[in-house]
Length: 207
Image (cartoon, rainbow, N blue to C red; front, side):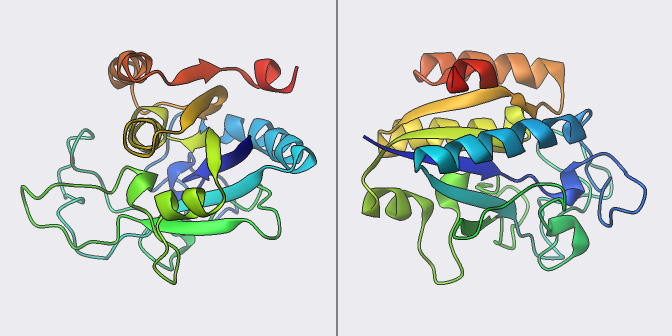
């Protein structure tokens, strides 16, 4: 059984504002910085187990309907993780192993009312245009563990699409992610349960 470990959008822009860390606070998720040591420990475990490792990053254009000057924090957001900026970079304390594959998402210039696929890593691609589902298929991955930010949006959406569209077994590590809001967290938990996605703690994974 081939397994992959995905670090979803652990980017500076999604971390709360931090002194001397460029790009933080653009769309800071409360307690987001607390996932860093958990993610890094899980990365070490994944490497020791021989799992394939990948990361995703929001890689937005400067102008897109995904952003708004008056964001509602459910479908529109403040400017964040613009391609090539400090906010789009993986947080410097997150250890990304050599050989991990990077996927970018949210690159479309959205118009108002357009279907927004920015949240899900299912639609992410490498610089050469390889999609995440194709990458998993190439490696005959049957199980995926996911960590990162934010649980109720990008992590959860990636988990749902991989489970429902790619047919892999998906597990989300609860203490290696944080939500934007409690209400959307509860909604996502229900959606994941209905899709057969398991939510586990780090200790349950490494036990």
